[in-house]
Amino acid sequence: MLEIDELSVAYGAVRALDGVGLAVERGGITAVLGANGAGKTTLLRTISGLQPARGGRITWDGKELTGLAPDRIARGGVAHVPEGGGVITELTVDENLRLGALWRRDRADREAARKEMYELFPPLEERSAKPASTLSGGERQMLAIGRALMSRPELLLLDEPSLGLAPLITARIMGILRDLRASTGLTVVLVEQNAHSALSIADRGYVLALGRVVAVDTAAELLADDGLRHAYLGF
Amino acid sequence: MQEFLDLTLGGISAGAVYAALGLALVIIYRATRVVNFAQPALALISTYLAYSVTKATGSYWLGFAVAIVAGTLLGVATERLLIRPLRHRSELSSIIVTLGLLLVLQAIAGMIWSNEPLAFPYAFDFVGRFSANDLFVVLVVLLIAALVLVVFKYTPLGLRMRAAAFAPEVARTLGVRVGLMLTIGWGLAAAVGSLAGLLATPPFLFPNVLDGVFVYALTAAVLGGLDNPLGTIAGGFVLGVGLSYVSGYLGPEMVTIAALAILVVVLIVRPSGLFGRAKVRRV
Image (cartoon, rainbow over all chains, first blue to last red; front, side, top):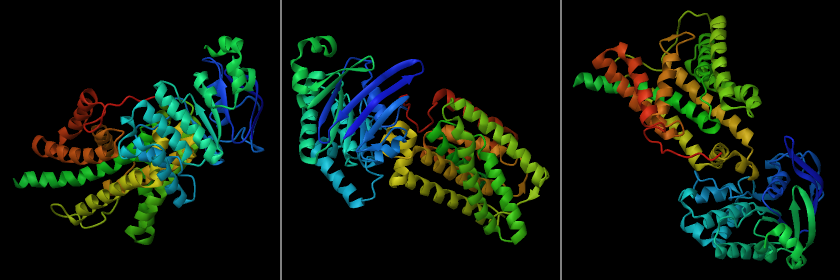
């Protein structure tokens, strides 16, 4: 499981995270919700090593991640899809996809994973030789998620996968995540401003405000809590 | 007609050298946004080492091999010791460091090997129109350029290097060791640069021997697009031939001015190069 204790992160004098604690069971989908600037993106960036922690610990399966370089964390089975997807537009669709698994030694399985991604996201296969810059927003998000899954991660960190996408495409992406969890036992941490769609597939949710955890509960309870929804989730 | 042919062939062989040194600049620029002004000095030290080895052993090719290996190591050392500590500063800091390194290495070369011109051999017979040596220069540059392009485009290492150059942060989260890719890039660039130095130097080796070639290589890289290895190689050949015509028809004294004029005009009219597409870089 993913365990985060007393995590603090600061940008200069500005505290982005202030003693955040979080526990995510294996095979679960956990939503991290909150307004802009609540610290959601910072939380994911700190887990994947892009942002140094000022205090606290992050462990995955008992192994400490705090202080490790991002490439080490990635090779430990943690995949991070950043806000906007982070698709490399100068590379082709296929190159982006292959990049996700290059560090893995098993060549045959890399090839198998690539086939699976094209089956999972057929629009990508049609455009595999085209520059990723030619993809639509929804296709980019598919590519970003496919690229992350290429490494067969155990933990998938997703930052605002629904941002800027049509509701129908968001629903499809959420559906794919749900299926993946069921078929592979993938653990997902899903950061969203779109609380409703995130809670529709999550088991549990954390609500962040100004760098602190202000609520933790099952997805159903969070959805039912009107006061919380109005105060922090905006719907 | 005869003169035109001579000038064209001579230009191709000179252009090959600009292409090679330009390629060395582009490999580093693309990865780090730094124009490596120390590139000619790294090549210079390698070439002096080739001189010493060749003089001691009598073998041109042993000197050649030593120069390429030494160039690679110098590039790696430059990245690790001078460029990496500045990675959180602006690119300007790195550029100034490479300028400083240029001056220091040229001075060191003078102290070790003296500032007097030393006879430095051609690889092959150099007499006549498009000599065996000219052919060798063009072929070896085309071969190395093709090799570099194939590595970038078709190998997992090349894919990692491009990812590290275009989107370092994303590359890290995909398990790419970005620092290592930069080091490899500097090593590769300096190896190609050393090759250019070996080809450009004859007949005489002295501390400033590569200064002119460097200006033309930089012009070739700007002409082809500093981001664009293939464009830079083409730019090198185009520039070589163009300057050869200038030298033949307008006079050799016009060559440097013509190169600078081309540099300025390209920067004004097509800042991303003749073959480059204007591109918005995300920060």
